[in-house]
Length: 157
Image (tube, rainbow, N blue to C red; front, side, top):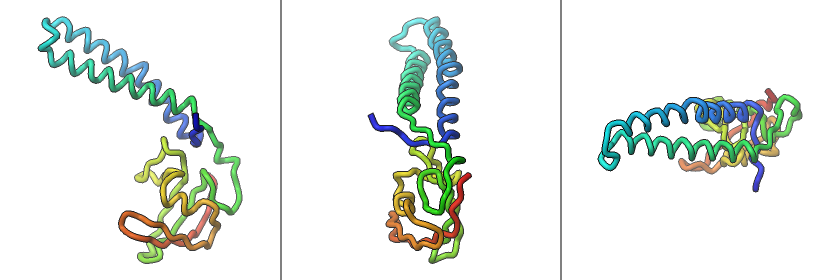
């Protein structure tokens, strides 16, 4: 059973989603199933089958969240420091081709969200950055070809 590294914020987010699935979604779906049963023949009752499928999906998500939380290795990023990029670091990169600046935080897989500036520790970019320091040149093989970046800043927030 492998541990899943994640930040305290990521752990809290998963806990909140689990609580929502258990305390809000589960009772709502049970109510839908109960209402659908009153409509008669279950073999031809689309509402009943839709509610049962929702129940199955919700229970699967609950099991997945419980597993991730049980295997979580919570790392307090606020206690980390240094110039070397590791898990939890917030890194400012400049694309060598376009001079575009990007800021990424390296987080665990369950909390990765590129739109929010959080990339998974297992992503090609994060793997290329681990162990590097400010000023380093990094080349990453992306689906669109190799990209070059320069590390401008390493922060811990």
